[in-house]
Amino acid sequence: MERVLKATLFLWMTGVLWGAFFYAPPARGLGDSARVIFFHVPAAWIAVLAFCMSLWHSIIVLRSGNRMSDIKAEVAARMGLVFCVFATVTGAIFAKSAWNSYWNWDPRETSIVVLLLVYMAYFGLRSAIDDPDKRARLAAVYAILAFCVMPFLVFVLPRITISLHPDPLINSEGQQNIDQKMRIVLFAAIAGFTGLYAWMYNLTVRIERLVRKKEGEDV
Amino acid sequence: MTLTNVAGAERRLSFISKTCAVVRKDGMSEFRTRYALNSALLFCVTCVFVVSFAVKGTVQDTRIVSAMLWVILFFSAMTGLSRAFIKEEDQGTMNLLRLSCEPGPLFFGKFLVNFLLLLAVVVIATPLFFIMMNVAPGNPAFLCAALLPASAAMSAICTLVSAIIAGARARGMLFPILAFPVLLPVFWVAVDATDIAMSARGAWQHSNMLLFLGCYAVAGVVGGSFLFEYIFEE
Image (tube, each protein chain N blue to C red):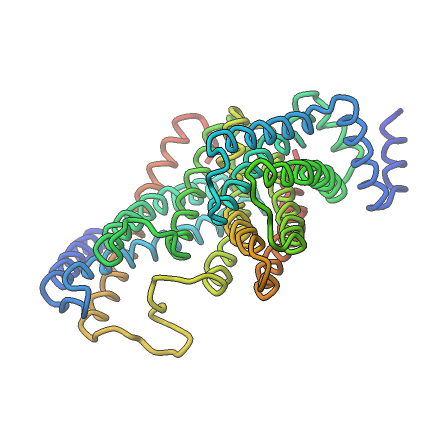
């Protein structure tokens, strides 16, 4: 079963790559450089999804002190950091071609950079505490505290400042301002990246559990 | 005093009186040593002089001036506000606090002390900064209305982060790293609000920024006191 899933994921991602470069048309006014959205948007989505999963497991850590949830929270944050870096780099490349500058401190750019800083601070905190229980608890508190910032960044700040980004796909008018072919590839890429994340997450949780067992932790 | 006496005394104290007790304890301790106030204030004043010396009154762009002010205030807060719980951990009094006070009043008391400390720094450093930079805010009332909730938000977040890092290694380095992402929205809006306060007219049309800072401060205090319970338990 696992092999079938892995083969399906491989074929799906191959299809996404083909679709991104050959099936989807170039965007009006932006040309071929807009193809980066097929990788940038799913990576940003995974960064947020991983952050939410890390938050969920952090809440469980605080409620029950479950060591396995601490592993899951840490691994989700680690995966989130990888995808967040990917989203930031692809976004900066696209910003250079679209707005002639790698970085503009647009509200969405700011939210992704805050997410990046939060993840880095989270791992900085984890590495500075020796006791596993204390580390799990304090890292969970920080993950929840950092998550509380997100509504202010995502919902409030863009409304009191000016954004260079277009409206979200699912916007206030309920319309999707995107070509049909591009939409198919984009949603396929989001599904593919989610599958890739699930596979990497599952694998890393198992590895981390073995590492902690070897270090003498009770997990 | 036996443990039974301590527990009995604890029950009789209400939330407010316990908060006042924490403020009084920390206030007296700070009054004796003036460690946090001196370090934050001296750092802030030094920064103001360094910045003023570097630009020699040539910077008149309100955006740059506002950004400079908030960079100085941010790092001054990082210098002075980190000690709230670190000093308890260093002096070995954290367990005594656990025994004699509940998490809510303790967090709120520590927040109030940090807030007063930051306000003292802001009240002294902000006019000095404008004098040294040779600029004057066009709307001082709007500036004050922005400084007050921004300082409250910074104090609340710094108090909680101080509690998080109290038991960690490399605390001095870790404090700004942990605090900055959480304080970034405050920093962003505070710089914008200060920039707007530099012009005399139309500042109050942007009062939604003040509302944002106020809401962030309230969220910081309420969320902080809720999360602090989990840090406080041992």
